[in-house]
Image (tube, rainbow, N blue to C red; front, top):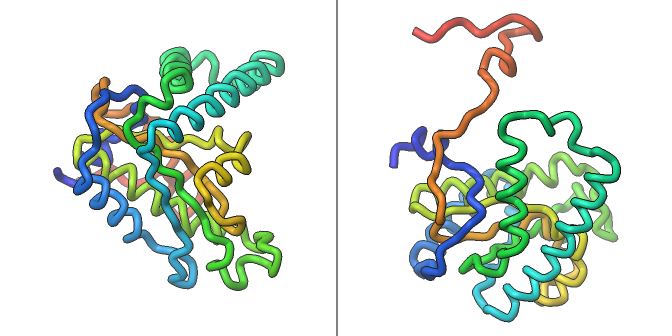
Length: 220
């Protein structure tokens, strides 16, 4: 696929068909993830691709509980009041609720990890991040590569962070070492829904030339 077509049509897809993800596709996607840049060239990323049904069901059970707790907090505090009336919100929340109830149905769930032991001066001796911006800038480009590579192969994904509510249990379940922080869970599979194109805020609202408020020139 053309690169810009991949970028312009990749979106969060949260419902999956039961068809398995081929080994070759999984390898290509994870290889693409490892082509990302990282601070000091340290490559502190690790990935655990979960196919085992028991493990996926356990992750799904914990994920749904975390979703329900998050929804209670959102309703109680009106946490989404800034976006609640946007056209996309109700549809997005329905899809997110569907994912929570069927998380285990994704044929593959990828745990994306940041190995603090490979961060050098960006982390202290106890693994505490000294420069969180540089540390996370060394893993999330890899996650984005993963999402884009999946799209190029016709596979759906979404980046989730609800696992933070049960990260220690998840690390134990997947035998992930203590120094590795799981920064994202990415369900992967053949999507039931369609890819983009996506709708985003106009470029003129978010991009400036030289100084804030000066618009970019019109394209030729």
